[in-house]
Length: 341
Ligand code: AQP
Image (tube, rainbow, N blue to C red; front, side, top):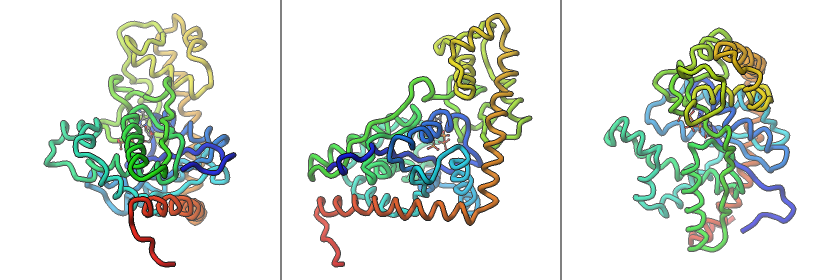
């Protein structure tokens, strides 16, 4: 079922409040695209607090605070509630309602093939993983499908989950009629995977055991400078973009390029023969120059939590209207009796 002709294409994306701050990977890989897409798309962005329960261990007060920080950081980064719908996932119960229907259409085999789940099992053992960790890609599919989103701006790590979402939408439509929109991933190749500064074979991640290679957007300037200057590079000295053989330096160039709006080739030429020290010093300055005002704006939103909650309430009200309409169609299509008005 398509939306009305002439509508702008719709995007949906979410971010988990699983840390005290987003990191540069979240910003460069996802949030930056969110800000750009709200100009051209009907954009729905959410703090996916339900997903934050999937590791089975959370502190209620901490989760509440992190959800507010996440929303404040999105607003500080340029997500504009006048241009998009910004809300908290748990404020829209239709996500979980659709999720149940999709769960019943998902095979154990396909859910077991999700690499994030397999990585957790490899790391901690299946006995120590909760069922929520196993089923959360289905909830993520519901997050997307409930808005009939056309595109999903995410980092590369989410590609497999978007594939599952597409499969579930197609399966649903095949069995019950053309109700859901089959979404496309929106992943920018150059910036879809920002690497850990200490381990350039791994993505920068909130849940990394060591935070030494993870630059949080709320880090103090001195901590950022230290992390950038200690970034692992290689034994060569050439400042050259080559993700295969020089992943550490290439990662620094990508971050530098995004934050300064200078093409990578221009940076390579500018630092030719200067070694990694100069590159790191200037990159540290660029990161601090970017994060400092963002930090101020985030703290400003957190100081005015009434205003923040108003923004989230308005976002949830709009999101619920859209989500409820899809859910009505889904429930009808699968054979549930519509409740009397
Ligand atoms: N290193 C990264 N490079 C590019 N994009 C990234 N994203 C995450 N890490 C990178 C993208 O950020 C968005 C929000 O991520 P999330 O909060 O939903 O969780 P995640 O993908 O699992 O990211 P983390 O930081 O690694 O969190 P934890 O450790 O809690 O699992 C997504 O679009 C993601 O692709």
